[in-house]
Amino acid sequence: MRVATWNVNSVRTRVGRIVDWLERSDVDVLAMQEIKCRVDQFPYEQFEAAGYHVEAHGTNQWNGVAIASRLPMVDVVRQFDDQPGYANTGEPVVEARAMAATVEGVRLWSLYVPNGRDLGHPHLAYKLEWLRILAEHAKTWQRMPLALMGDFNIAPFDHDVWDIAAFAESTHVSEPEREAFRTFERLGMVDVVRDRAAGYTYWDYKAGRWQKGEGMRIDFVLGTAPFAELVTGARIDSGERAGDAPSDHVPVVVDIDVETELDDDRPMIF
DNA sequence: ATGGTCGGTCACCGA
Image (cartoon, rainbow, N blue to C red; front, side, top):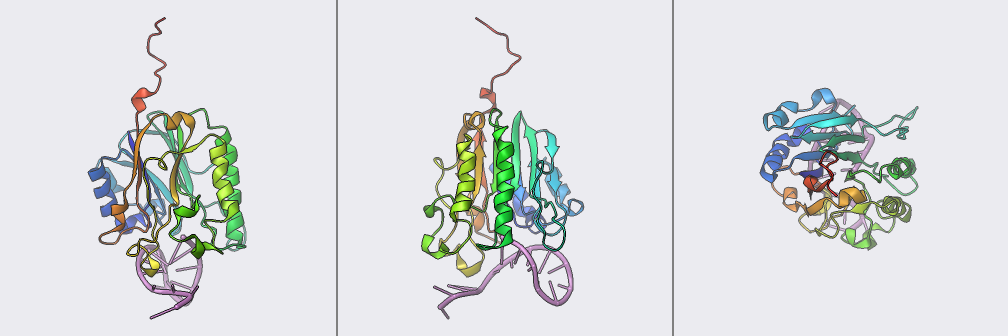
């Protein structure tokens, strides 16, 4: 089974490109982030025409996540328990940043971690609290094949950005954010792409970052040990940053061998 | 040159 994660930065603007890529890349399940629309605005038809069913979670023009799959999805949930909200004005609102589905016995989360905006901004505290609660749940998930897939808005290592000196007073590389990322690894989760594919996953539209090769590695697939055992390959499709009207992020693809999963129904032979 | 561009939607916010 081939799974992928991609911050598409508006699914309506890029639906043609996304579906073309899905078919060309022989992807079974795609976790999307930043769909930037409500569920009633989602372009389901174009996915369905290509054989993909979509479960979406979007409440307004910001954020939004979805999972497209050509294999059956079960146990779909549209947030995690006690997911923190953000108070732009007035009461905190739980945003459309997380959803999960189980495909072929593998639990897959599509996550759009809050950006953080600036050091000292309330949005950074929100980001850290959001990750803290998610990690509390992840503690209980380690014995199942499960992956946290998405835009983490964290660059775990200095070499995950083009010039660490340019990030001296920035989010994404701060120690609290990196510590939040490492929390998942301490629970036993593995960045299953790191040792299999090099390169960035995001290049800002501003300042000609793509043309200058100045990107960031902030999109990840973090798998539990039972998930990591299934992984047979991974790649970052940086070619998707080129061409007409690209997203500022590119797809991250992981191949898993669901056949190696132990089948409880097989006859026991001693 | 401490910026530069895109989305959303319609005067700006968010990344």
